[in-house]
Length: 318
Ligand code: TXA
Ligand code: MG
Image (cartoon, rainbow, N blue to C red; front, side, top):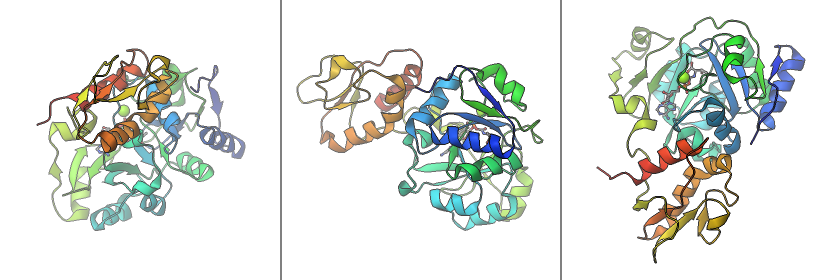
């Protein structure tokens, strides 16, 4: 697990940006300014880095994260950008707008970024420091707001340090964030839908599209909270220390090495989080009618979010 003792404060000089990019490439976390709020960035292709984001924030659940890229071409490499998305991107990118688009599986994003959904939230921030960092890193950066879970979003480097000092690799100090509220989120996997109001006014989006945005139901706004938004096709049984005959057992830790699959053979919660969605899918693919039995995962650190997700996977289906 990445656990630096001291969080570096970097300035947006060529040296500071190169250091931020090097830390990201090493799988460490770097908080950086956007025009909305500071984001807590990690390499979106590195499952351990993404798991580290949830650990650093103390998030109790794996909500999908927004992926930050420098321009529309980079967005096209991650997701399918349809005609409505092209229009919105032309009008509002770079800027405080996030588009939720069908993900390209070949983009190599960690399934933890999308929380196992077939869509990904993509944003091209306008802040010059965010732009410079993304270009220096040359890869997609997953980033929620850089605050402890349940706390107010940070709009200054000092706010980031208040909550996350000692828990992340570095903060790139770009001064105060000019917008101060999070990006507007529009879902574009079906009819354009307002998922979260934010920095771009809804009226401006509707003018651009020439049509009203659909309103999302409460369950869609926070897909991570939907009871079984990613449920395997197979039935799932939890806290299984002794699988029944014919069950597909997913282990956790050294006591479960006999299991067919494992979230983490060593019992490492960061590794387990990084593997979670991938292992659930693999189990589903090889279950062939068997019940999936999952070993107990301790309720500490990322274990809370892992258990939250497992409970949703095991919840009765509608
Ligand atoms: O301004 C912002 O958007 C900031 C900066 C750092 O970019 N980021 C931010 O991230 O506010 P966060 O994690 O606090 O909020 C992300 C929101 C969540 O409500 C999540 O449910 C939604 O984006 N989201 C992300 N991916 C999604 C997806 N595939 N489908 C639906 N909603 C998604
Ligand atoms: Mg937030």
